[in-house]
Amino acid sequence: MTVLVNDLKVIVFQLLNKEYAVPVQNVQSIEKVMHITRVPGVPSHVKGVVNLRGVVTPIIDLRTRFGIEAGSFDEHTRIIIVTLDGREVGLIVDSANDVLDIPETSIEPQPNVVGSIEADFISGVAKIERRLLILLQLDKVLENVS
Image 1 (cartoon, rainbow, N blue to C red):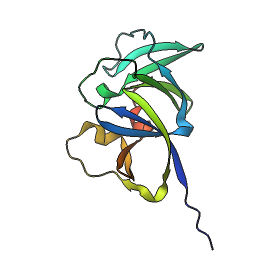
Image 2 (tube, rainbow, N blue to C red; image 1 turned 90 degrees about the vertical axis):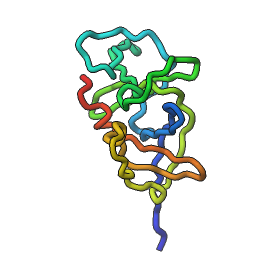
Image 3 (cartoon, helix red, strand yellow; image 1 turned 90 degrees about the horizontal axis):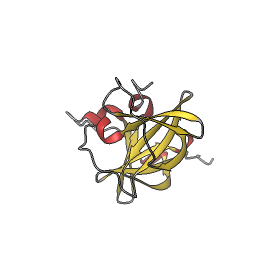
């Protein structure tokens, strides 16, 4: 009898010196930073909106969302366009590096990190060789974004 191990295919991106991952099936595209139109009265982590191929898409700065110090955009900065429950949202990240297959067996539940804002947004961690990938819980990340 063979046991099938499900791999989770993810897009890996960086914020500061940590690596995060989101499932490939939620990613529409990875874009270079473009002009973001500010919108008044939105939470501070919502940078504004962009018109992406005719679709007005809200943009979230993940550094601000996670309470990490803001960084300046450079040639590596990317906007990962994700969809969840029919909503399309852009996530500003420092860089988007890889597409990886994570064996389900290497995924562990979220560690108990007390006092970390980002802990609310983590579904688990995966250890791949010497890398530690933080798996995001997109529904939590996208809460309160219209």
